[in-house]
Length: 256
Image 1 (cartoon, rainbow, N blue to C red):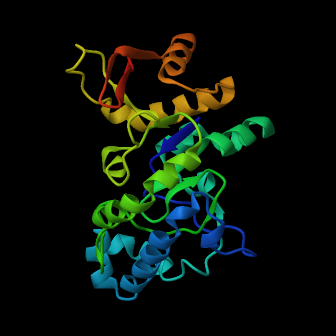
Image 2 (image 1 turned 90 degrees about the vertical axis):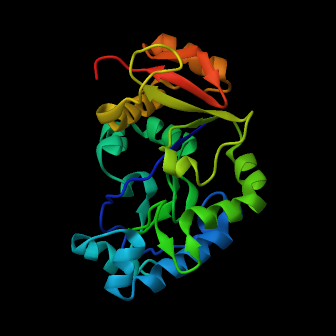
């Protein structure tokens, strides 16, 4: 089982001062060429504030992120799930998991970011700023990932080695859709008529974090869509098997 989360725009600053980014050590290594290119472009465009603000769609309040982009290769690193912060990651609360649960989390949770692509929870990364809709010297991030994944997608998804549960937001799913037959996108939705349910909205991020935490703490090992539906029933999640289609299935969340 591999659960894929979106990254967060906000990140914890700092890390282990004795270690810096090692691109070759990141998981799903077939992405190394696009990673290296995106790091170089991100650092290059960040040398001047005005072009960087345009590239990353930031105002002056984001200048600190731009300055940190200049030092991606020399900044301290920390595990990805400790680096990302915000509502989703606060609800997951990895730091409060038991040692056994943390081991399970590291083995089964991943993030797909604009800069690194697919990485595991334990991969060591620096603080940075790059979003799926950023535009770099060689073009949009979306276009660059689409081109790169055209040649490495088979390797990336084969390394996932199991059922993939995709919890990414639309923009990040678009960078590298999960191929049919190896997993499913779990859409968190409001109660309503099947086929016309609205996205969860305000509570979406917290609900995702809680769901992933429940997966980890329950010891679940999902190997199929049927396993997901059964686990949902056991844990009180309304995963609507009848809603499945085109690689998507609804999880109906009430009370939000």
